[in-house]
Length: 87
Image 1 (cartoon, rainbow, N blue to C red):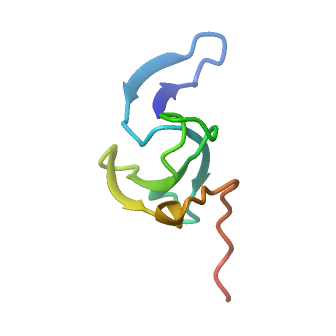
Image 2 (cartoon, rainbow, N blue to C red):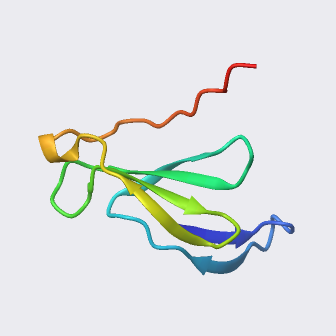
C-alpha cells in the first residue's frame, strides 16, 4: 500500500510504502480511523492473490495482523465492507 500527501491534489507527494500481501487492492478504514483493512485478492492468478486481509495500524504505519479468511480452502475475498456497530 502506498501513502501519499494529497494536500495539494495537483502535486501529490509520496510518503511511504507499507507492505501488504500479494494482490492488495481494496481498502476500508475503520470507523475510528485507527486501522486500514486491505483485501489481498486482485486476480485468481499465481502471485496475484494471497486471499488474506491485511490489518494496517495507521499510527504505526505498519501491518499488525493478517486475517486468513478461507484462503486455505481455496476461496478469496471478493469485496470488503465494515458494518457499523449497533448503537
